[in-house]
Image (cartoon, rainbow, N blue to C red; front, side):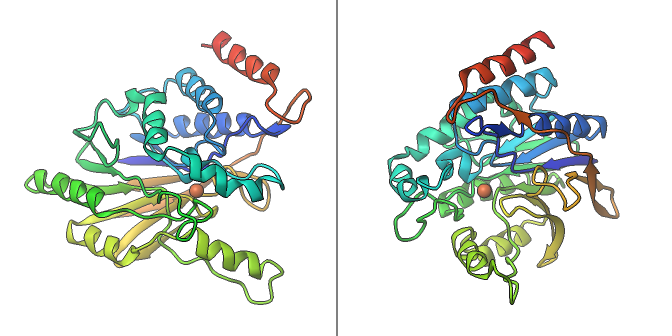
Length: 316
Ligand SMILES: [Fe+2]
């Protein structure tokens, strides 16, 4: 089985330039690699803007990816709360997060791509996550790791938490398929490794803040739970590095730098080949493409969006 893992597209039409053509290029390469399944582990958009989700949906349609047997998504913190898009936003962002209707945003995420959940063998329609799919002889579980906003516990709306209700539902999925011998894979947005704070770095303070505001809470409990049910592999993003690592015997694939790219400017795909004996995770570098220059205007440029939508429609 071959999985193609991408994460953190952070698509937004807010800026003068955006990464639309990079995303298109990464997805085309993902298709060319002829995987059994393509996965994006959250932060599809940077600002949770409905227009941006619709543009991505159009792109997925054009690439014939609107098929739950081919393609899976999990939600990221930016898909619910967005992010600070300008210097002034840093001060207004917490207030904005406080007004977000969390459950409605998760529901909207599902509503942009309902076909990608249609083949789930388990789907709680009220909560959307966890969902479970059977692809070949693998049970693939999609989790929502986004912690609700809290002034004190989650002030930047970027921390992660998977609460007891979601774990209970996941437990029920594992129990239902306990006699089936499926191999188990988890898809989730948040990372399980530690962010290294580099000594003598000018970014040291920022790294420390990042460490405190991006973390997944109760990781030990989750790792124990995954181990108990034989989860072999976890796919995630959030932390913008692409790599692989191992914790408590479980393999992790982080595709967080898919669109951020390497130092040489190339983009990344994580290609995961799984046989009975081994799991191989390879980072595939893709040559970057030029960013899209917007016409004009500081805020959303309807002209640009219309052009992108028209281009997608014409090429279908
Ligand atoms: Fe994120």
